[in-house]
Length: 281
Image 1: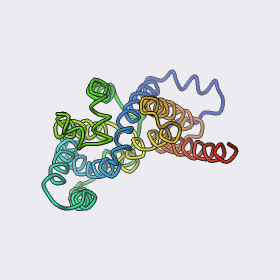
Image 2: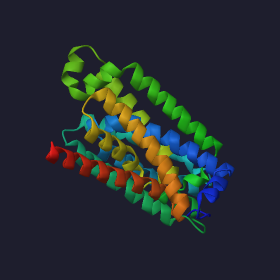
Image 3: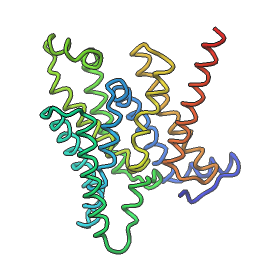
């Protein structure tokens, strides 16, 4: 929960002078761009349940970090990465539907996470903070990690954009044309898992999937041209993150849920606008 309530513009400007607020806004911008970029491909490739599973299973990494008295972030990153790769491997090596595999692995990981959480004695602030998120608590290390994941994701996706588009639209044709489909799939899962891990501290395990899916969904409503869709997704992710931070400060609401709430409102507004425009056309 935020420590300050803002009643006018001067109070808002004063609040923006605090280092923790500046770090939070920088983090919101970076995560908004990252969420919009990766979320575009998550939405088109129907991987929203995958990112949802990675986010919720991250509870195991957080609980392990608390139990071992380590920084939960340093346990969260490798665990999320390992979980994402293992799940994709299971999907490839079984005849079960991907949603069935995800449900099974997610349920098992959640069960383990709850059991480990019950073993934690005393203060559980770190665990609760990761569950619900607190972007005001991010530090310089978190910003650097987010920036590294953003640079890595942007470099990989934009340098192979043609191949990524073909892989998204028709994996069979991409394979025939010699594109290393499996390698690209695993690289994307690695980046997606890392993005989920760094975003969890800001918006929490319970809302991290919305951070990836909503901006891309808004952009998809607005444009079906891929390049424009990708750009709009990044813009929506970035601007709604900043707007959510301002909304959080104005009304003294929790920052992570405020960002997702603003994104949800934007989605509803764009959806209504598209429908009204279609009726009057």
